Length: 180
Image 1 (cartoon, rainbow, N blue to C red):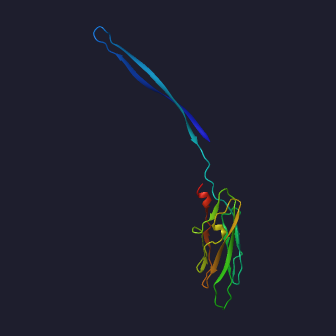
Image 2 (image 1 turned 90 degrees about the vertical axis):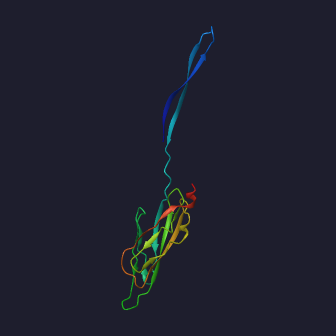
Image 3 (image 1 turned 135 degrees about the vertical axis):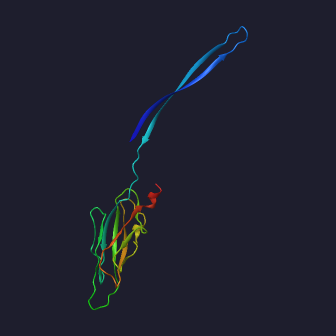
């Protein structure tokens, strides 16, 4: 959108022409008024906001001997990932450390390259639970329309307790978008 406003201003230039005589010659003075018109147009240009990264996310999990990470889901608007791992322990036996793998499938539905920011992404659980940093090709640029994956290993130590998981997956413009 462009808005304009025309402005006109007059600048007066005054010069004096003086003739001076001696003796019988008379003195004559004349003023000359010159004007210059100044016109122009002020313009305001509105440009679109920079494109934001947009991701469609799907997730799945594996089941190992004592740890089941298949209860993972994503909200319809892709803003919430729900993770409900189930750790199975046999009464009377020493608890062991168990692991499972989460796989995130990221589809770039935006107009700029995007990537999963490993340093800013966090997943944490209750005492005794850990989640690795994301690994996979989704940590590199994902072109518009492309699909890449990332994996996270969830570990439940022998001392793992029940409780809530929290964190966030962080997406940033890819390096190709940073220069534009």
